[in-house]
Length: 170
Image (cartoon, rainbow, N blue to C red; front, side):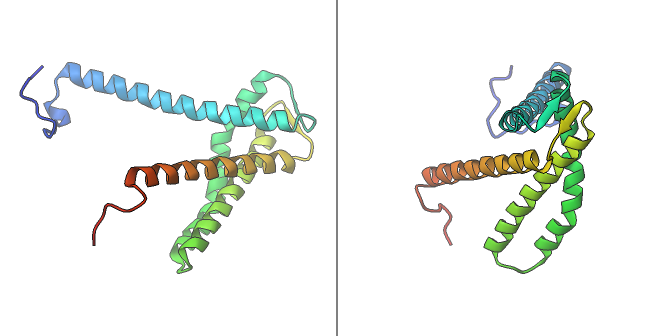
């Protein structure tokens, strides 16, 4: 390893050796797989929470059905996002107040989650749901609560990092 390497030096992909490229590719693959695993685990945990909360409404043929539900949720979420996309795009083009845009964006997020769960309930093999809108509403509210918690933690981190004031000067 070169001892003259300074932190400000930027290496390009072409300047890396074959071993460094392999190590970087291996690391990025591991990072991508870790992120995918974390997302799927969060979706499975949410699915299990919704299923446990609406136990009398959801009937599954087995544990495999839940894994099918997790696997099908992401494509169903994409489909639901496609339905909400024109509304989000139109909202961004309007000149309404910033707070109104944030509230409307949050409402569209809840509606997108609601639609995604409905789609997932209907296309998952071996899953029977009585009153499918109830678990979908529960999942949408769960996602809204998680989003509020994340935003609150971001505010705390930002205020703690900046000491309650901005470091930027006019």
